Length: 158
Image 1: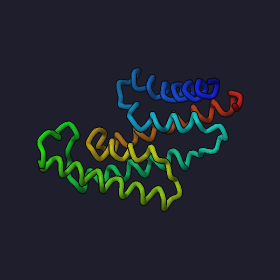
Image 2 (image 1 turned 90 degrees about the horizontal axis):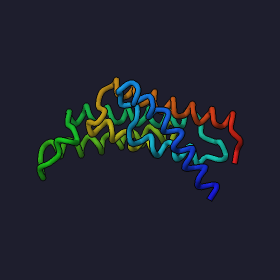
Image 3 (image 1 turned 90 degrees about the vertical axis):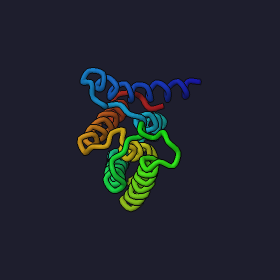
Image 4 (image 1 turned 120 degrees about the vertical axis):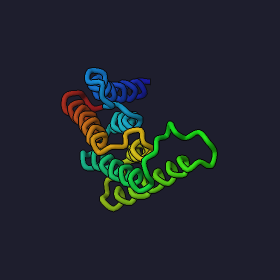
């Protein structure tokens, strides 16, 4: 029970910081792949995650997502409504290309971070499809990772 509460609490804490920045600034500083990142960091009682893995994985996700979005053509997930539509095919192609690139880069660079697979879809599906969105994603991940490191330094290990 104590272990579950600790993980839940740290997950919420890690997500609340970029969440508060999103609220104060009105920017997309909170997005779906931060949830799994927060959980993985909160679960890391051995304190093994490094910035190169967490942030580097999301860098790969942004690069893959932007590339998939650019290759397949601009489309937005909200446009998907008709079966067998051109927009639907664009979205699928962009997502597949994005994940292919992201997975390749993460393995090749040894920065495997599964939540980055969600990041690449967020970008390639047109939810956050611009390079400035990619910068926002990486800033939010960096803020979350900083909170993780701060908690390691100043709060007792389990």
